[in-house]
Image (cartoon, rainbow, N blue to C red; front, side, top):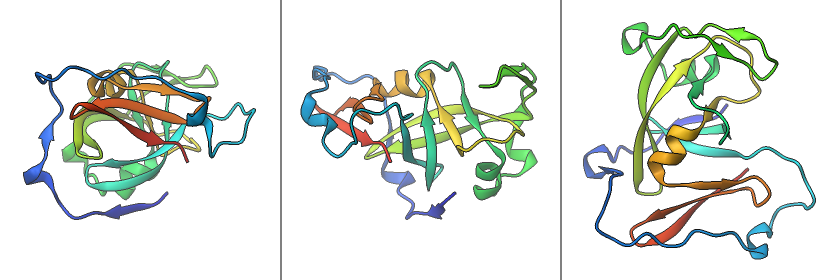
Length: 166
């Protein structure tokens, strides 16, 4: 996992919210597949700025209902137990096993100049990913993800912005 502190822009950022602008049309074209090996069945894995750090190996899972943080990210962000709130609802892992989360924490995720805050469920389980972002993040951003094109697209400032998969 690569976690590096970036210059703080917290004072100059605004949280994503409804704006008076018309939402641009989001679509995917064959040209969007340039730079990807086709055909493929790869998951969409991206680098995101979470709590001011660039975090690699973040899985975008549009079928999941919660954001998940794994131990490496928890340690890399230097979070402390007092930063967390209790969360005791069990989750089902990819293998179908019941996982009892440790806790929850609300953190900002920044993409370009847009910031949304999401609740990450902290679980003590192995994963090849450092975190999973899911429906709450996608919906808050107004984003559409497509694994075939290895991209997340979202409307912002009257245009469509992209997060490109690794």
